[in-house]
Length: 435
Image (cartoon, rainbow, N blue to C red; front, top):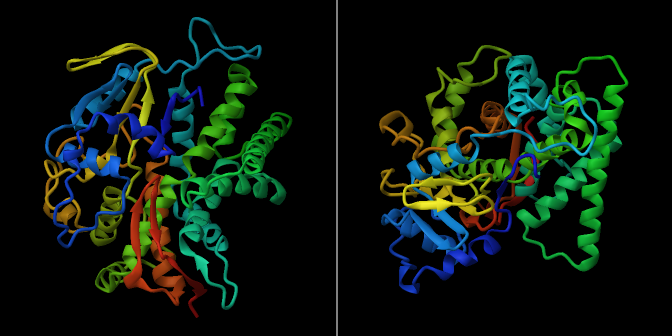
Protein backbone atom coordinates (compact mmCIF):
# COMPACT_ATOMS: atom_id res chain seq x y z
CA UNK A 1 0.00 0.00 0.00
CA UNK A 2 1.50 3.32 -1.06
CA UNK A 3 -0.05 5.12 1.89
CA UNK A 4 1.93 3.09 4.38
CA UNK A 5 5.10 2.35 2.40
CA UNK A 6 6.17 -0.43 4.72
CA UNK A 7 5.69 -4.13 4.38
CA UNK A 8 5.84 -7.32 6.30
CA UNK A 9 7.90 -9.77 4.31
CA UNK A 10 5.14 -12.23 3.61
CA UNK A 11 7.38 -14.34 1.39
CA UNK A 12 10.46 -14.52 3.58
CA UNK A 13 12.31 -16.76 1.16
CA UNK A 14 12.21 -14.20 -1.64
CA UNK A 15 13.08 -11.39 0.74
CA UNK A 16 16.23 -12.84 2.25
CA UNK A 17 17.84 -14.67 -0.68
CA UNK A 18 19.93 -11.60 -1.51
CA UNK A 19 21.02 -11.30 2.11
CA UNK A 20 21.95 -14.97 2.27
CA UNK A 21 24.27 -14.62 -0.74
CA UNK A 22 26.48 -12.32 1.33
CA UNK A 23 26.81 -14.78 4.22
CA UNK A 24 29.65 -17.30 4.08
CA UNK A 25 28.36 -20.84 4.38
CA UNK A 26 30.39 -21.39 7.55
CA UNK A 27 28.15 -18.96 9.39
CA UNK A 28 25.31 -21.53 9.47
CA UNK A 29 26.12 -22.74 12.97
CA UNK A 30 23.72 -25.37 14.23
CA UNK A 31 24.83 -25.87 17.79
CA UNK A 32 23.34 -27.82 20.65
CA UNK A 33 19.69 -27.17 21.26
CA UNK A 34 19.26 -27.41 25.00
CA UNK A 35 15.75 -27.17 26.46
CA UNK A 36 15.12 -24.52 23.85
CA UNK A 37 12.26 -23.64 21.53
CA UNK A 38 13.93 -22.79 18.26
CA UNK A 39 11.27 -23.11 15.58
CA UNK A 40 11.94 -24.59 12.19
CA UNK A 41 13.34 -21.75 10.09
CA UNK A 42 14.61 -21.20 6.59
CA UNK A 43 18.38 -21.72 6.44
CA UNK A 44 18.84 -18.06 5.48
CA UNK A 45 16.96 -16.92 8.57
CA UNK A 46 18.93 -19.25 10.86
CA UNK A 47 22.20 -17.89 9.49
CA UNK A 48 21.22 -14.25 9.91
CA UNK A 49 19.72 -14.83 13.38
CA UNK A 50 22.88 -16.57 14.58
CA UNK A 51 25.08 -13.85 13.09
CA UNK A 52 23.06 -11.25 15.01
CA UNK A 53 23.68 -13.09 18.28
CA UNK A 54 27.41 -13.07 17.47
CA UNK A 55 27.48 -9.32 16.84
CA UNK A 56 26.94 -9.09 13.07
CA UNK A 57 23.78 -6.99 13.20
CA UNK A 58 24.18 -4.09 10.77
CA UNK A 59 25.57 -4.54 7.25
CA UNK A 60 25.02 -3.71 3.61
CA UNK A 61 23.63 -6.58 1.54
CA UNK A 62 23.97 -5.04 -1.90
CA UNK A 63 23.99 -1.61 -3.49
CA UNK A 64 20.38 -0.89 -2.55
CA UNK A 65 19.67 -3.21 0.41
CA UNK A 66 20.66 -2.83 4.06
CA UNK A 67 20.26 -5.03 7.13
CA UNK A 68 19.80 -2.93 10.28
CA UNK A 69 19.09 -5.43 13.04
CA UNK A 70 20.66 -3.86 16.16
CA UNK A 71 18.22 -2.19 18.59
CA UNK A 72 19.66 1.28 18.06
CA UNK A 73 19.90 1.08 14.27
CA UNK A 74 16.43 -0.40 13.84
CA UNK A 75 14.95 2.34 16.02
CA UNK A 76 16.85 5.14 14.28
CA UNK A 77 16.15 3.90 10.75
CA UNK A 78 12.41 3.83 11.42
CA UNK A 79 12.49 7.25 13.07
CA UNK A 80 14.34 8.85 10.15
CA UNK A 81 12.39 7.02 7.47
CA UNK A 82 9.05 8.19 8.83
CA UNK A 83 9.88 11.75 9.85
CA UNK A 84 7.57 12.97 7.10
CA UNK A 85 4.29 11.06 7.06
CA UNK A 86 2.51 13.30 4.59
CA UNK A 87 0.14 11.25 2.45
CA UNK A 88 0.76 11.03 -1.30
CA UNK A 89 -1.56 13.21 -3.35
CA UNK A 90 -4.98 11.81 -4.09
CA UNK A 91 -6.04 11.05 -7.65
CA UNK A 92 -9.41 12.55 -6.78
CA UNK A 93 -10.37 16.16 -6.21
CA UNK A 94 -10.16 16.78 -2.47
CA UNK A 95 -10.24 19.60 0.07
CA UNK A 96 -6.74 18.75 1.28
CA UNK A 97 -4.97 22.03 2.06
CA UNK A 98 -1.72 22.27 0.00
CA UNK A 99 -0.15 24.23 2.85
CA UNK A 100 -1.28 21.80 5.55
CA UNK A 101 -1.42 18.39 3.91
CA UNK A 102 -3.08 15.43 5.59
CA UNK A 103 -0.68 13.00 7.27
CA UNK A 104 -0.78 9.35 8.10
CA UNK A 105 -0.39 10.37 11.75
CA UNK A 106 -3.74 12.18 11.63
CA UNK A 107 -5.46 8.96 10.59
CA UNK A 108 -3.58 6.96 13.21
CA UNK A 109 -4.52 9.47 15.93
CA UNK A 110 -8.19 9.22 15.00
CA UNK A 111 -8.03 5.42 15.05
CA UNK A 112 -6.27 5.43 18.42
CA UNK A 113 -9.04 7.59 19.84
CA UNK A 114 -11.66 5.06 18.72
CA UNK A 115 -9.67 2.14 20.13
CA UNK A 116 -9.24 3.95 23.45
CA UNK A 117 -12.99 4.53 23.68
CA UNK A 118 -13.55 0.82 23.04
CA UNK A 119 -11.22 -0.23 25.84
CA UNK A 120 -13.94 -1.25 28.30
CA UNK A 121 -15.47 -4.41 29.69
CA UNK A 122 -18.63 -4.22 27.57
CA UNK A 123 -16.64 -4.04 24.35
CA UNK A 124 -14.33 -6.88 25.42
CA UNK A 125 -17.28 -9.09 26.37
CA UNK A 126 -18.73 -8.57 22.91
CA UNK A 127 -15.36 -9.21 21.28
CA UNK A 128 -14.97 -12.47 23.23
CA UNK A 129 -18.41 -13.57 22.11
CA UNK A 130 -17.55 -12.84 18.45
CA UNK A 131 -14.25 -14.70 18.78
CA UNK A 132 -16.01 -17.74 20.20
CA UNK A 133 -18.60 -17.65 17.42
CA UNK A 134 -15.87 -18.15 14.78
CA UNK A 135 -15.02 -21.67 16.01
CA UNK A 136 -16.28 -24.80 14.25
CA UNK A 137 -17.88 -27.21 16.72
CA UNK A 138 -18.96 -30.08 14.47
CA UNK A 139 -19.09 -33.35 16.41
CA UNK A 140 -16.26 -35.67 15.46
CA UNK A 141 -14.73 -33.03 13.20
CA UNK A 142 -10.95 -32.74 13.43
CA UNK A 143 -9.70 -29.35 12.32
CA UNK A 144 -6.47 -27.43 11.92
CA UNK A 145 -6.30 -25.44 15.16
CA UNK A 146 -3.93 -22.98 13.48
CA UNK A 147 -6.67 -21.86 11.12
CA UNK A 148 -9.33 -21.91 13.82
CA UNK A 149 -7.32 -19.47 15.92
CA UNK A 150 -6.52 -17.28 12.93
CA UNK A 151 -10.27 -17.07 12.26
CA UNK A 152 -10.94 -16.13 15.89
CA UNK A 153 -8.38 -13.32 15.76
CA UNK A 154 -8.86 -11.86 12.28
CA UNK A 155 -12.58 -12.35 11.70
CA UNK A 156 -13.55 -10.80 15.03
CA UNK A 157 -11.43 -7.72 14.28
CA UNK A 158 -13.31 -7.13 11.04
CA UNK A 159 -16.21 -5.90 13.17
CA UNK A 160 -13.91 -3.50 15.00
CA UNK A 161 -12.85 -2.26 11.61
CA UNK A 162 -16.34 -1.87 10.08
CA UNK A 163 -19.35 -2.57 12.29
CA UNK A 164 -22.25 -2.29 9.85
CA UNK A 165 -21.53 -4.70 6.99
CA UNK A 166 -24.04 -7.31 5.91
CA UNK A 167 -23.29 -11.00 6.55
CA UNK A 168 -22.54 -11.41 2.86
CA UNK A 169 -20.06 -8.51 2.91
CA UNK A 170 -18.30 -9.90 5.99
CA UNK A 171 -18.09 -13.25 4.18
CA UNK A 172 -16.34 -11.62 1.22
CA UNK A 173 -13.76 -10.01 3.50
CA UNK A 174 -13.30 -13.30 5.33
CA UNK A 175 -12.68 -15.12 2.04
CA UNK A 176 -10.03 -12.55 1.18
CA UNK A 177 -8.35 -13.12 4.57
CA UNK A 178 -8.50 -16.91 4.20
CA UNK A 179 -6.90 -16.62 0.78
CA UNK A 180 -4.02 -14.63 2.30
CA UNK A 181 -3.68 -17.15 5.12
CA UNK A 182 -3.46 -20.03 2.65
CA UNK A 183 -0.28 -18.44 1.31
CA UNK A 184 1.14 -17.29 4.63
CA UNK A 185 0.29 -20.19 6.91
CA UNK A 186 -0.21 -23.22 4.71
CA UNK A 187 2.40 -22.10 2.13
CA UNK A 188 0.14 -23.19 -0.72
CA UNK A 189 1.53 -22.79 -4.21
CA UNK A 190 -1.06 -21.11 -6.38
CA UNK A 191 -1.85 -22.19 -9.92
CA UNK A 192 -2.47 -19.59 -12.61
CA UNK A 193 -6.19 -19.98 -11.98
CA UNK A 194 -5.63 -19.69 -8.24
CA UNK A 195 -3.78 -16.41 -8.71
CA UNK A 196 -6.65 -15.03 -10.76
CA UNK A 197 -9.13 -16.13 -8.08
CA UNK A 198 -6.98 -14.53 -5.38
CA UNK A 199 -6.86 -11.27 -7.33
CA UNK A 200 -10.64 -11.41 -7.73
CA UNK A 201 -11.14 -11.91 -3.97
CA UNK A 202 -8.81 -8.99 -3.29
CA UNK A 203 -10.71 -6.73 -5.69
CA UNK A 204 -14.02 -7.90 -4.24
CA UNK A 205 -12.84 -7.10 -0.70
CA UNK A 206 -11.81 -3.62 -1.85
CA UNK A 207 -15.21 -3.20 -3.50
CA UNK A 208 -16.97 -4.15 -0.25
CA UNK A 209 -15.05 -1.46 1.63
CA UNK A 210 -15.62 1.09 -1.11
CA UNK A 211 -19.37 0.44 -0.91
CA UNK A 212 -19.23 0.75 2.89
CA UNK A 213 -17.52 4.15 2.58
CA UNK A 214 -20.12 5.41 0.09
CA UNK A 215 -22.98 4.10 2.22
CA UNK A 216 -21.59 5.77 5.33
CA UNK A 217 -21.17 9.07 3.47
CA UNK A 218 -24.87 9.06 2.65
CA UNK A 219 -26.05 8.29 6.19
CA UNK A 220 -26.07 10.32 9.37
CA UNK A 221 -25.29 7.77 12.14
CA UNK A 222 -21.92 8.16 13.82
CA UNK A 223 -20.45 4.68 14.24
CA UNK A 224 -17.70 3.68 16.66
CA UNK A 225 -15.38 1.77 14.36
CA UNK A 226 -12.20 2.38 12.40
CA UNK A 227 -14.09 3.28 9.24
CA UNK A 228 -15.80 6.29 10.81
CA UNK A 229 -12.71 8.53 11.15
CA UNK A 230 -11.83 7.75 7.53
CA UNK A 231 -15.33 8.75 6.46
CA UNK A 232 -15.08 11.92 8.58
CA UNK A 233 -11.85 12.82 6.73
CA UNK A 234 -13.18 11.76 3.33
CA UNK A 235 -13.37 15.26 1.86
CA UNK A 236 -9.62 15.58 2.42
CA UNK A 237 -8.68 11.97 1.69
CA UNK A 238 -10.56 11.09 -1.48
CA UNK A 239 -11.70 7.55 -2.26
CA UNK A 240 -8.27 6.22 -3.22
CA UNK A 241 -6.57 7.19 0.03
CA UNK A 242 -9.61 6.25 2.14
CA UNK A 243 -9.76 2.81 0.56
CA UNK A 244 -5.99 2.40 0.88
CA UNK A 245 -6.16 3.17 4.60
CA UNK A 246 -8.87 0.59 5.24
CA UNK A 247 -7.20 -2.13 3.16
CA UNK A 248 -4.04 -1.48 5.18
CA UNK A 249 -6.00 -2.45 8.29
CA UNK A 250 -7.20 -5.67 6.63
CA UNK A 251 -3.56 -6.53 5.90
CA UNK A 252 -2.52 -5.71 9.46
CA UNK A 253 -5.04 -8.06 11.10
CA UNK A 254 -4.20 -10.95 8.77
CA UNK A 255 -1.44 -13.40 9.59
CA UNK A 256 1.14 -12.21 12.15
CA UNK A 257 -1.29 -11.56 15.08
CA UNK A 258 -2.86 -14.96 14.57
CA UNK A 259 0.56 -16.58 14.28
CA UNK A 260 1.53 -15.35 17.75
CA UNK A 261 -1.85 -16.44 19.11
CA UNK A 262 -1.48 -19.95 17.64
CA UNK A 263 1.91 -20.51 19.27
CA UNK A 264 0.70 -19.01 22.56
CA UNK A 265 -2.28 -21.37 22.79
CA UNK A 266 -0.21 -24.39 21.72
CA UNK A 267 2.30 -23.62 24.48
CA UNK A 268 -0.53 -23.08 26.97
CA UNK A 269 -2.06 -26.48 26.17
CA UNK A 270 1.36 -28.07 26.63
CA UNK A 271 1.86 -26.42 30.04
CA UNK A 272 -0.46 -27.70 32.82
CA UNK A 273 1.47 -25.76 35.47
CA UNK A 274 1.01 -22.45 33.67
CA UNK A 275 -2.65 -23.28 33.10
CA UNK A 276 -3.19 -23.73 36.84
CA UNK A 277 -1.38 -20.49 37.69
CA UNK A 278 -3.33 -18.45 35.13
CA UNK A 279 -6.67 -20.02 36.15
CA UNK A 280 -5.91 -19.03 39.75
CA UNK A 281 -5.53 -15.42 38.66
CA UNK A 282 -8.70 -15.58 36.54
CA UNK A 283 -10.66 -17.02 39.47
CA UNK A 284 -9.78 -13.92 41.51
CA UNK A 285 -11.59 -11.64 39.05
CA UNK A 286 -14.95 -10.22 40.02
CA UNK A 287 -18.06 -11.71 38.35
CA UNK A 288 -18.34 -10.38 34.80
CA UNK A 289 -14.84 -8.91 34.90
CA UNK A 290 -12.36 -9.69 32.14
CA UNK A 291 -8.57 -9.41 32.15
CA UNK A 292 -7.30 -6.31 30.36
CA UNK A 293 -4.24 -4.13 30.34
CA UNK A 294 -2.44 -3.19 32.51
CA UNK A 295 -3.13 -6.61 34.19
CA UNK A 296 -2.08 -5.18 37.58
CA UNK A 297 -3.29 -8.19 39.55
CA UNK A 298 -2.39 -10.77 36.90
CA UNK A 299 1.41 -10.90 36.52
CA UNK A 300 1.41 -14.54 35.41
CA UNK A 301 -1.10 -13.97 32.60
CA UNK A 302 0.69 -10.81 31.52
CA UNK A 303 4.06 -12.55 31.57
CA UNK A 304 2.71 -15.44 29.51
CA UNK A 305 1.38 -13.06 26.85
CA UNK A 306 4.55 -10.93 26.75
CA UNK A 307 6.73 -14.03 26.49
CA UNK A 308 4.60 -15.26 23.60
CA UNK A 309 5.00 -11.89 21.87
CA UNK A 310 8.76 -12.10 22.42
CA UNK A 311 9.17 -15.66 21.18
CA UNK A 312 7.02 -15.62 18.06
CA UNK A 313 7.00 -12.89 15.44
CA UNK A 314 7.57 -12.72 11.69
CA UNK A 315 11.23 -13.37 10.82
CA UNK A 316 11.87 -10.25 8.72
CA UNK A 317 10.19 -6.96 8.00
CA UNK A 318 11.40 -4.52 5.43
CA UNK A 319 10.96 -0.84 4.75
CA UNK A 320 11.18 1.02 1.50
CA UNK A 321 13.15 4.19 2.17
CA UNK A 322 10.82 7.17 1.78
CA UNK A 323 13.72 9.65 1.80
CA UNK A 324 17.52 9.68 2.03
CA UNK A 325 18.94 9.16 5.52
CA UNK A 326 22.03 7.81 7.26
CA UNK A 327 22.40 5.27 10.05
CA UNK A 328 25.98 5.06 11.26
CA UNK A 329 28.23 4.46 8.26
CA UNK A 330 25.34 3.47 6.01
CA UNK A 331 23.94 6.05 3.59
CA UNK A 332 20.50 5.04 2.43
CA UNK A 333 18.87 6.54 -0.64
CA UNK A 334 15.19 7.00 -1.37
CA UNK A 335 13.79 3.73 -2.73
CA UNK A 336 16.40 1.51 -1.05
CA UNK A 337 15.27 -1.47 1.02
CA UNK A 338 15.99 -1.73 4.75
CA UNK A 339 15.60 -5.01 6.64
CA UNK A 340 14.65 -5.00 10.32
CA UNK A 341 13.70 -7.94 12.54
CA UNK A 342 12.01 -7.99 15.93
CA UNK A 343 12.43 -11.78 15.76
CA UNK A 344 16.23 -11.50 15.70
CA UNK A 345 16.15 -8.91 18.48
CA UNK A 346 13.91 -11.02 20.70
CA UNK A 347 16.12 -14.10 20.32
CA UNK A 348 19.50 -12.40 20.59
CA UNK A 349 21.76 -13.71 23.34
CA UNK A 350 23.34 -10.27 23.70
CA UNK A 351 20.07 -8.87 25.08
CA UNK A 352 18.26 -11.83 26.62
CA UNK A 353 19.23 -14.54 29.04
CA UNK A 354 18.40 -17.94 27.49
CA UNK A 355 16.48 -16.25 24.67
CA UNK A 356 15.15 -19.49 23.17
CA UNK A 357 13.57 -20.69 26.40
CA UNK A 358 9.92 -19.90 27.05
CA UNK A 359 10.09 -18.26 30.48
CA UNK A 360 7.15 -16.01 31.47
CA UNK A 361 8.80 -15.34 34.82
CA UNK A 362 11.57 -13.36 33.14
CA UNK A 363 9.13 -10.42 33.04
CA UNK A 364 8.97 -10.35 36.83
CA UNK A 365 12.66 -11.10 37.30
CA UNK A 366 14.83 -9.57 34.58
CA UNK A 367 15.35 -6.07 33.28
CA UNK A 368 14.87 -5.53 29.54
CA UNK A 369 17.52 -3.93 27.34
CA UNK A 370 16.29 -0.68 25.84
CA UNK A 371 14.69 -1.14 22.41
CA UNK A 372 15.20 -4.92 22.50
CA UNK A 373 11.49 -5.74 22.99
CA UNK A 374 9.50 -4.39 20.06
CA UNK A 375 6.63 -6.83 19.36
CA UNK A 376 4.52 -4.07 17.80
CA UNK A 377 7.26 -2.45 15.74
CA UNK A 378 9.11 0.84 16.03
CA UNK A 379 8.02 4.44 16.47
CA UNK A 380 6.54 6.38 14.82
CA UNK A 381 4.76 3.50 13.05
CA UNK A 382 4.12 1.11 15.93
CA UNK A 383 0.96 -0.96 15.63
CA UNK A 384 -2.05 1.12 16.66
CA UNK A 385 -3.76 -2.07 17.85
CA UNK A 386 -1.10 -3.00 20.41
CA UNK A 387 -3.41 -2.62 23.40
CA UNK A 388 -6.40 -4.21 21.67
CA UNK A 389 -4.23 -7.08 20.43
CA UNK A 390 -2.81 -7.76 23.88
CA UNK A 391 -6.30 -7.74 25.40
CA UNK A 392 -7.48 -10.04 22.63
CA UNK A 393 -4.73 -12.53 23.49
CA UNK A 394 -5.96 -12.45 27.10
CA UNK A 395 -9.51 -13.17 25.91
CA UNK A 396 -8.22 -16.06 23.82
CA UNK A 397 -6.55 -17.56 26.89
CA UNK A 398 -9.78 -17.13 28.86
CA UNK A 399 -11.72 -18.96 26.14
CA UNK A 400 -9.32 -21.91 25.98
CA UNK A 401 -9.06 -22.24 29.77
CA UNK A 402 -12.66 -21.59 30.76
CA UNK A 403 -15.02 -22.16 27.84
CA UNK A 404 -13.37 -24.31 25.17
CA UNK A 405 -11.56 -27.62 25.18
CA UNK A 406 -9.31 -29.20 22.56
CA UNK A 407 -9.69 -32.97 22.31
CA UNK A 408 -7.80 -35.68 20.43
CA UNK A 409 -4.63 -33.64 20.10
CA UNK A 410 -1.11 -35.10 20.26
CA UNK A 411 0.54 -32.35 22.32
CA UNK A 412 3.91 -34.13 22.36
CA UNK A 413 4.04 -34.07 18.57
CA UNK A 414 3.56 -30.36 18.02
CA UNK A 415 6.35 -28.71 16.05
CA UNK A 416 6.87 -24.94 16.00
CA UNK A 417 7.82 -23.30 12.71
CA UNK A 418 8.63 -19.79 11.56
CA UNK A 419 8.89 -19.83 7.79
CA UNK A 420 6.67 -16.95 6.70
CA UNK A 421 4.84 -16.42 9.99
CA UNK A 422 4.75 -18.50 13.19
CA UNK A 423 2.93 -21.80 12.77
CA UNK A 424 2.49 -25.04 14.75
CA UNK A 425 2.73 -28.23 12.71
CA UNK A 426 0.54 -31.09 13.90
CA UNK A 427 -1.82 -28.72 15.72
CA UNK A 428 -5.00 -30.63 14.92
CA UNK A 429 -7.87 -31.71 17.11
CA UNK A 430 -11.50 -31.16 17.99
CA UNK A 431 -12.55 -27.94 19.69
CA UNK A 432 -15.63 -28.46 21.89
CA UNK A 433 -17.53 -26.25 24.30
CA UNK A 434 -16.97 -27.00 27.95
CA UNK A 435 -20.15 -28.04 29.71
